[in-house]
Image (tube, rainbow, N blue to C red):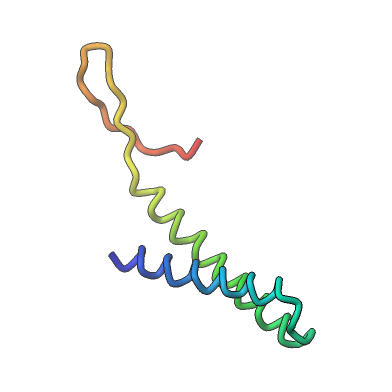
Length: 75
């Protein structure tokens, strides 16, 4: 699934950026570049999650025992 691979890769890059920033070993210029990359990766992750969220269906059991599909409302 391309979305998952994209999500996983973006999440890994985001985690790497956070680790680099938390290390405290970057110059201000380097930290700004890493932060910018992290923001872009976070946005990519958010978009991927939103796309998957829109594809999710909830199955709700009715009183008669049947299942009814309803769109995922996210709340």
